[in-house]
Length: 244
Image 1 (cartoon, rainbow, N blue to C red):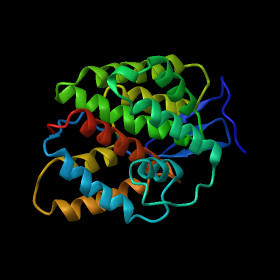
Image 2: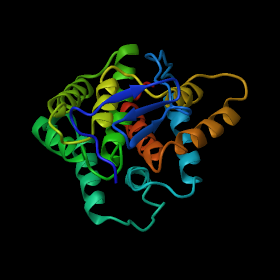
Image 3: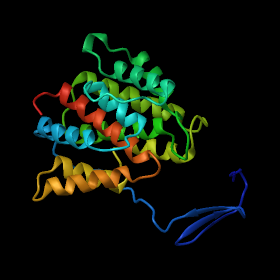
Image 4: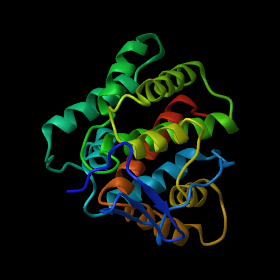
């Protein structure tokens, strides 16, 4: 049980960060954040099918990834460990996947705000999920034309992220990750996965399988939660941009 307080001394070297006399952050195996990605979203339907198949065959899914996946694949039922978390996820998904005329900025803002700080750990699951979702949407927007409802929802989600910065609603690490997501920035592992999924190259199937495993290896459930957000964003993009 170590705590970080304002005013504590900070020492940084190549391998670790020492805060005060007790808190040591190991930097020997850190995840590097990549610059923005230039991705090809053409043929997205077939790529989404591949991702569906990979997720359905993956054991030990996090609650976020399982519930997000089951939302669109009702045949893949499984027990839910936390009704509270599940309800928050479902409320968000219902507010996110609406028809143009039914879209409510207030509803989406309320549902997204509820996800921030949801869960335990250095980066709570709700934050990881939103980071994957918001990052993918912003990355897509930088490389493609965006339809009106998707543009409005992205603006709302970005506003939710910025409105929570500095409010202590979640951890500083999560705030940094979420803010980066509004620029379409990802951890290198997520970037490698997206490149393998969305760009056609030799041995892409083997490459994608390994990169999904790499994503799922991040933290206790952070990788799966990030992947859940990426998955939901890709489903949304496919639904709103059928020509892809």
